Amino acid sequence: MALDGSSDQTLSRRAMQAELLDAETELRLAYAWRDERDEEALHRLINAYMRLAISMAAKFKRYGAPMNDLIQEAGLGLMKAADKFDPDRGVRFSTYAVWWIKASIQDYVMRNWSMVRTGSTSSQKSLFFNMRRVQARLEREAASRGDILDRQRMRQMIATEVGVPLHDVEMMEGRLAGSDFSLNATQSTDEEGREWIEVLEDEDARQSAEVEHEKDIDTLREWLVNALSALNERERFIVRERKLRDDPRTLESLGNELGLSKERVRQLEAAAFGKMRRNLEAQSREVHEFLV
Image (cartoon, rainbow, N blue to C red; front, side):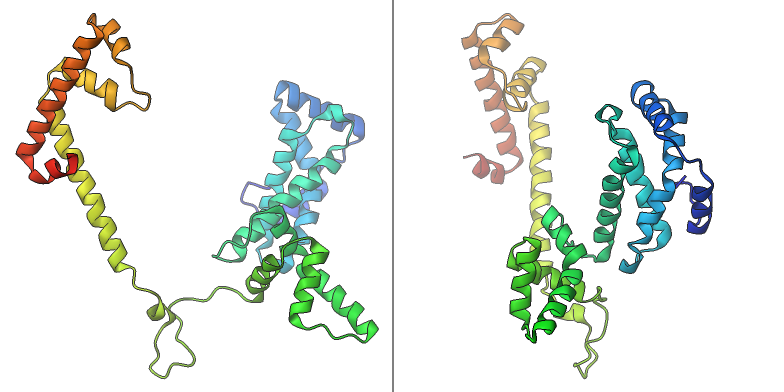
């Protein structure tokens, strides 16, 4: 239901009209999906609890994300819950689904809060969604005592309360302080109207070096292909199996396959390398220096 492109109003109306499942029906549908992969049972289970997903999505509207997107993410969380739910544990599906729905919405909010990655660990997620609430409570408690908390002391108390390192609180405070700004915005303190992008470090030198390096690698690869083409089929096979595999083969295993002694395979390998070296030296003296 949540993934068909409908508006949030339409989804809400349809969710409110969905059937209410009793415990016995819910259990039967859960078994049908887990054991038989009955898609009709899955759809009934999802539709019945979509109102729960929408209700939870509405609690995250204050983070600025479109309600329809929040409902979509809540629906995805509900589907994950249905896929992983084990009816043998004796827990109602709605109780189990709450965690998955909340986790899916929270991940979406954090991904879209800023172009800069806000955080990914459980402690950082807890800080992101609880920092302002904890700070407000600490400020109320301090005011009731007639105490004044400076910023550093407040950060330390929040870190202790939430159970995260102090530097995480400092980082998250900056993330929550404001939204992203365009690098093409004009600096307000600059009379010449320069854009912020003009103060960034010029990376052209590094990029140029990377391009040159990639070009050299491509050239070397071409030379090696040409050198391999100068070998006969058996020599190419030996070189490929001995040097170009992730798990190089032994001289003995190659000898068994080719019907040769281990020493003879070693001689053929050495001869093949000699041919390749001469071919490469003929193409460029730079490769000779590279191989020495």
